[in-house]
Image (cartoon, rainbow, N blue to C red; front, top):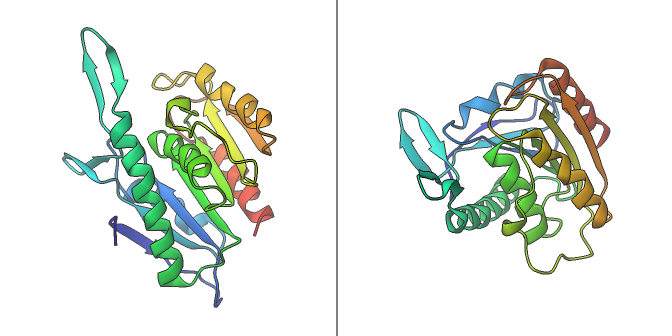
Length: 212
């Protein structure tokens, strides 16, 4: 396997289960979002991946975020692009290993994981059918120069209005960009910081259930 992961197998028997891949944020690990798994629909095969870059103390990153006095905070976009490719290969490996339903692949990312979920959905058209982007934004530098007009992926987007890590203004651009590409999306905001409010969880859970 290209990435380490943990898995919650479906609680109902299904020869071709729907697949939900979880991508954690910067400095976290595969256990973080996996806490959602027990509360999500029984028929899902849920796989939580670990980012490839070890930060020590149990933390991992999909790509480096560097800080210096000249540029301030900036992202290593080459590493980010490589991680998108790794995640795409990983999804294929999981689909094959667990014989999942090719028409029901969900990708849920938080923060860095959400940024890469957006990027992957454009770079690998229709590899995933549904994207849940929590506390992230569309980094246009990670998108292909030409956007494939056959993409049918839809998006659930949410963000905290007092997010001190990724400003709410960045997230608000996502529905506009997606609408320009005629892609369906549901956008919501919650009065929290860089995290997922309980009502936010129940909202995206409903969104996933409607697509199973």
